[in-house]
Length: 173
Length: 103
Image (tube, rainbow over all chains, first blue to last red; front, side):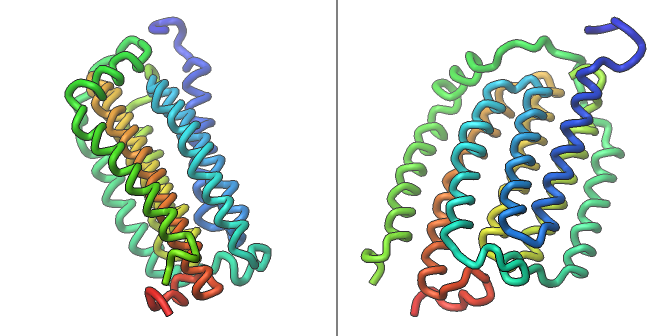
């Protein structure tokens, strides 16, 4: 990898391509007037973020992103979009209000964050070897992070029961 | 990864965060707002994994990212259940229409 040639390797060009793809799809989520287009742009964004995880040598996180986000969350969102009708009605389905204050606020926050990103001297170590992370993550979940891990299972149980209770008609008085 | 500085990953996270915040602030469709929240969580996750990678201890940041992914799935399930409940009560998922918790 190191010192192979002066010109940037293919992986660098691929990273910038995936980063641009991710941001463009996120812009589609933010600016599309049709909620169905927004949902499919979100699919592209989640895919691009998974690719970025791969570039960061986080193989297990990228896999979890695919399985949970694209396989679970996005399908849930599409179900909700299709179950609530009038989706083809562009004027109603994804109305946006208060654009100017939102642009001002978001722009201000983005400028401040960009200054933080570029002005701070981040303590960075040099390139690590790209080793599989699953072993270390498994040891972490069953070692120092055992309490949050067990709490997560409890949270998921509560979510399961709560979602059923909230969405069933006959259970609501 | 070699060849790409940490700042460029942070800029991707920053742009996702800004677009997600814009989505949350301007949408009146409850599902659209949930999509914006997913963008915000993904932006935070990119920062977690990038900082973890470049600081030399990749495991801790990745474990936090997995917790965030898990909580995002939980949030989506409950949030969309609430959206469907609102839709059944008000025949609309415009958040301005949902002014009461029940009829």
